[in-house]
Amino acid sequence: MARLQAPRGTYDVLPEAAAARLALETVARRILEGAGYERIETPVFEATDLFSRGVGASTDIVQKEMYTFTDAGGRSLTLRPEGTAPICRAYVEHGMQVRSQPVKLWYLSQFFRHERAQAGRFRQFWQVGAETIGSDDPAVDAESIALLMAILTELGVGGIELRLGSLGTPATRAEYREELAAYLRAHEDRLSPEVVARIDLNPLRAFDADHPGTREVMAGAPVLMDALAPEDAEHFAEVRARLDAAQIAYRLDPTLVRGLDYYARTVFELTSDLLGAQSAVGGGGRYDGLVEQLGGPHTPACGWAAGVERMLLSAEHRPLPREVCDLYVSGTGVPAFALAAEGRRAGLNVQLELAGRSRKGQRKQAARLGADVVALVDDDGSIALEDAGSGEQKLVAGATAAVAHILKGRHL
Ligand code: HAM
Image 1 (tube, rainbow, N blue to C red):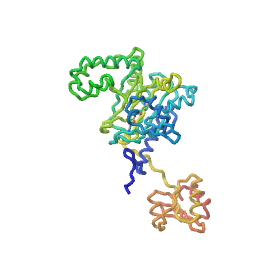
Image 2: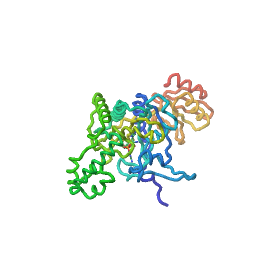
Image 3: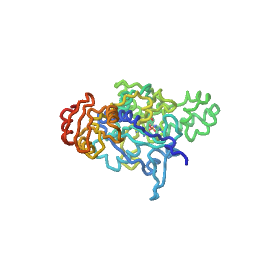
Image 4: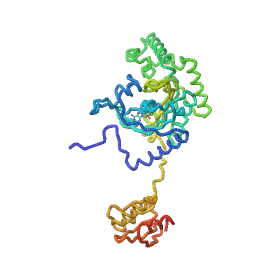
């Protein structure tokens, strides 16, 4: 029989990796909840339509990367490839527009994309994300970025660069595409055949080309950021003024493209030079049209998501101290079990001997766990409480008396 393994692009979080993930969650929660964000979790699968409409039918995610299946009821469902469309769906479904605006939500969830697996790229991965729904204030964009930066800094993620751009509105983008396509056609003879073939399909891809002739042409190409409508240019200037005021450094990137169709106005991406080819730690932007597109009222919004695996790969590891063991219960009979239960009811961290070790072996195990107190329990219910440090013993009768004693001194 073939050996069973975790599916390609997935991984097990083993106990030794749990502490670093808990530290990450703790930092994200403290910073985001401290800024007024509340946790949301949406289902792992959604109607496929949500993503084709929300993320965009022509994106790589929808075209090639979704785990889509038909359930026994004949519905087309998809394992969520991202969190923004589901959260906007929930915002509309629960009428969150009547709450005080903007609604500020955060999440730490799993996502699924059928991408080529490589270092830092998985088919099941985790993101921390934050979405601010119901405000077009440029302060939202700047604050979102500042909070993501604060999390990465606190985690010790090294070599970070923030790239920032603005996409304007869909109407400006459509006009700009035409302008860029016309420019490319006028210089067709110097472009690579692949770029020429895609002029109508996606002229923006020409900015990513390595072909020398194409690169020369693109150096003089019109950029979208110069074509923004006055109110979008003003909004972007307001965002930048706030980032400057908060001393957040960024590089303007007029060709920053994100892999999702819902963005309008501000977009950003954070990379770490400690990562390899998959250097994006997080990214996001404004999606003013998405809630309306999913059937809600016109609702401007902005947010980001950051990859947990990539944050862990590029972070310093400062795991939290592990839970202490207050009481190690040595003994295999019913009275030992009763003492463990009583101790836990009283709020102690209790571990019970489960491996049938010798008394000596049990003392060693208690020392490994850093237990304060070892309780040696006989089958008749008599208990000797032993201070793990000094070895000093105290005899007590019954679980209740033993727990009272431990609580009184914690140590004997
Ligand atoms: P995204 O850029 O597709 O944006 O993903 C955000 C982050 O998730 C990436 O920067 C990366 O760190 C991580 N990530 C993405 N795909 C993978 C993968 N296959 N393996 C490991 N990590 C991955 C979004 O998902 C948007 N929903 C962000 C957003 C929120 N925009 C507005 N609000």
